[in-house]
Image (cartoon, rainbow, N blue to C red; front, side):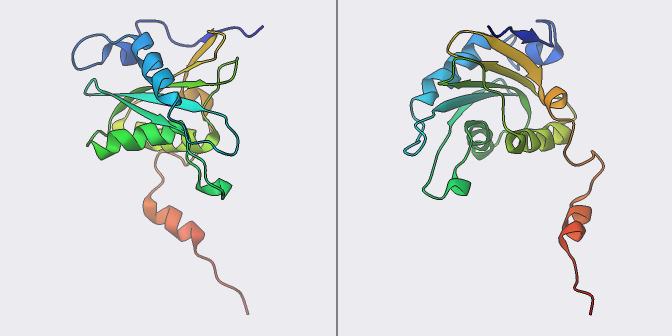
Length: 169
């Protein structure tokens, strides 16, 4: 049996920072669950839905997509964030993730790196709520799950320079 891990109480700042008052975790989870049915997963048939709560109080959904070339697929979490970005949103408070698994599914490393970059731009952590079909939940955050990634003071130039190399003759 999986236990629910709560790393934040209900008075965590992210839970009360919605533009129009408090928001409900259930609203975010329901949005993620509703959009999961739209996943395009012809290969794995493994559906994932995600919903992101923005600083303005809006919720944007995303589902996972697959392609015959596996590297071209996109996770639900990144699709939800990209959905928000298309609508001009850049500050994210929380992300909910639901899947077809019985146990809660946490975001992969690529999604965590993606979320961490937006969290750092906004100067805040992002809450993550994962729920399985069993109803078990894990409530954590990007900073708790992702201790790696680029250091906060890394510049784009440093990253670009790290990709340049030369062959010594």
